[in-house]
Length: 271
Image (tube, rainbow, N blue to C red; front, side):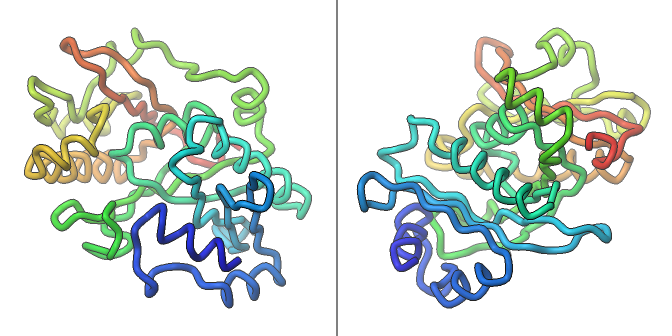
């Protein structure tokens, strides 16, 4: 658990005030929290941590942290940790897991939606405050998060895990539906018409392929992307849409990420 403390600071660059300390890890594990370590020999190279909660009058596991050392990020370790988390939650009789992630991070979006099969119907503005000590939370970009639900024992999740389906929706489908935010020339965000929200069965939201590069090279543009996608997700969710999928697609000679949203369903319908 001391190594888990250290790994949090290494991966996220946060200070001592913002890590989950050994005392909390030990106490929550005694009452059902799941703490899994991945090791090479005795060396901790990754971990996953979730605790028990209640959402919509049912028991859930909330996956608060998943971290992998940078040099081990190309060996599918995060995926294996999530599967181990799922096995342990199901063994406790809990069939739903939640967590949050930054919707501008395309790699995380692909991992969560395409590989694991999560769905989402909640957008949290500055969930951890406007800034934190982490280098990931730059001033002006905030800590907005999508709140996702992983229906652990659903047909949707079984299909994604067993058949290794990357996305059940084709690029052609994403081309046919209204787009609330589009990646324009030079990675500029282009907003669609708000009238399109609620008038279509399906809508999409595009994001740049690499928001981290934009943050480094054009921080003012990264802030505009936060503002544009905050508007789009908030409007869509308030109008009854559920985020159901994420795909990578070529647009205007550049790679972009595309969220696909559907109206008329709720998260529980995917379970």
